[in-house]
Length: 333
Image (cartoon, rainbow, N blue to C red; front, side, top):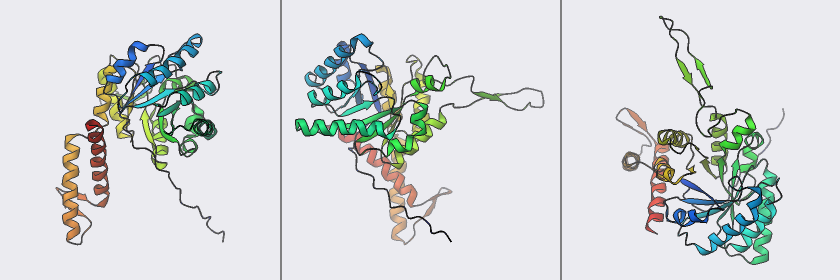
């Protein structure tokens, strides 16, 4: 009989507690947007050196991002810089200069993460910079999963580094890599649909599907397995508020805890979608009181309005109340 292999338990290192309900994209080549971003309600702001910057303006964008981090009062916002990909001539200097020269930096946002090694390489660069400069604040990493390779390696990437805090579904470049040829990123595709069987009168209904469900579910599961924050990416039709809200609700239902805002009008919608509702908080308080009373009688579960409530519900109630406490604490500060 072949012995069952022993797998030691996975130790998940603690990550900083941050709100990442909304992450506002700000091109580093547009300084006129910096003050507005700082005054916004976004939990996270990332200054973009990658897709929003033309090749000829890369050096200028990097310098402006560093100046913005050093000169603008960003309050308690989490500040990130999206560097250029590791397959470009700018990535190395982006990481070195920003981490060395901007003490306010919280996160390096690495695009097109395709393997655990990509994250480990950036981790090692940051470790060397921190040793060299005596930087007092440790720099975290968040990654964009936006290629077929990145989705295929989602679990390995999630487990790659204790610096890694969040994984973001980058639907734009993923659309390109998967060759679906959608013109608007983040929206559903009317082509990804099937027809139902014919009814008695011969009528058939068109049933839409979610073409990004696999990638998003895999990213969310990998994040939750390794203690990371899963964040949904852009919805580029910023005039379509209903569409954005629906996609944010979909992401929240899959376990994501935030979404990008590529326009300031999307910030409040993201914050609302990924905050506990009044009804959820009322339910949480009710469940905690109910389970505490049930436990005193020696029971672990109780029926409530025809629904079985047990210790799993108590865990969920505490998660909701803990998240609201984090929101309240940051709002006070």
